[in-house]
Image (cartoon, rainbow, N blue to C red; front, top):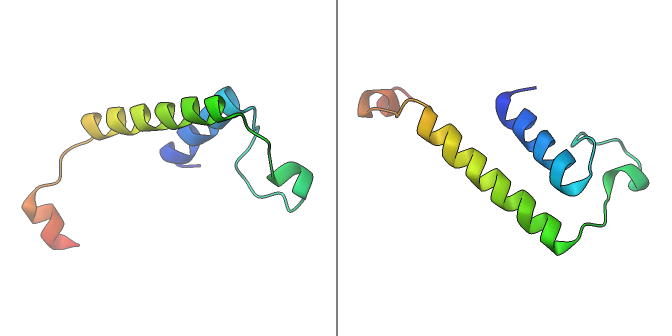
Amino acid sequence: MNQIDTVLTLIARKHLGIDTLQTRHADSLDFHDVAVWCLKDALEAAFKAGVELGASSQKATEADIAED
């Protein structure tokens, strides 16, 4: 599991009560009723995590972008 998947899974557990974000091929396990305030909290947590990860990661230079 990469860093983003780990962060998203932690957010899903904390804010949405969802144990895993892996598809389990069962409606009762893959679909969840979520209160809008919990969804809002989860989205805010994901945004903040993205800001923190972006701020801590090395900024791409023009040379790095040209390599892609």
